[in-house]
Image 1: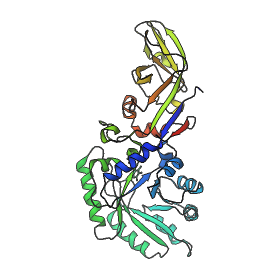
Image 2: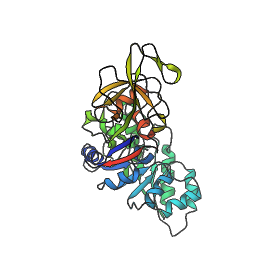
Image 3: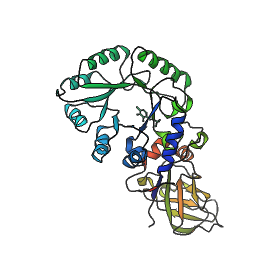
Image 4: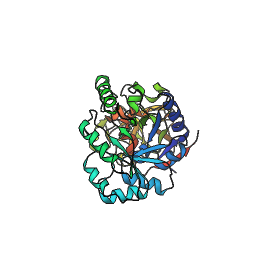
Length: 358
Ligand SMILES: *Cc1c(COP(=O)(O)O)cnc(C)c1O
């Protein structure tokens, strides 16, 4: 086989969950975020591997439905909640836990059949100003839900807007959140990966952890390794051609890179249709036999070119690492002007996933 593949180390994900858990308060439970197919790692596989986690979260109802249909029995929280009666019925049928983030969702819940039971979390807007209830809406919503005997409120959550970059803003959000839930005897959750690693939490019962679970740093100046995290994936491809390339000749679409000397190019069978970012600049490192070589020219749909110089022994069939291992995904993201979240969630279906447990 000479096609690209993504190797995924489930043991690293388990290790990261333990490490992150040890960084929280003793009473705090991790909610493992497995939206977007567990950031590309395979939601079902990650869910099955994380035996010690009891609560998982996804963005959309269909993601939760698919996991329940695959036999997952654990609690699955759906961040977007339900917005139609049909979605409510689906949530009930698959025993999904939904987030209530706007009062208009209450009208849908009022039509709940009497025999049903639905679990929910209520979302408070502490400063992100995207989804979530304002303070007066929060108390109204909690009392409205209290009057619906078939609804169980599991907790109140909120979300940081800038935990990776702005401590003042984050601590204000934390204060505002604590204040909002201070008189309610209920579970609470505000922190994501960045907030957890920065210590922006106090006595909340749950922490919601995505990126760092996969060993990746949410901070642009750090890598996961700096926090003791283990990278959970490597993106691999193969050299499919090695060619001589003349001085002053361009390579690839638009000829944006021109060689300053006679050299050799390795053509590698991976491109933007696989999720390798088209925005990766010439010079982005690619690893072959543990040696870094620079990407040259535009990333094509299915191919990239690398300048291997005149003394390398790189040959057709050699395996290439695009990120992972000695090539942190955080560095590649920076070379492409994107965030690691985009790279992880962008690896396309065309790329085979191979699972390892070591
Ligand atoms: C994605 C998401 C998280 C996890 O964020 P990370 O930065 O990946 O840890 C937590 N909470 C909500 C509401 C999210 O959408």
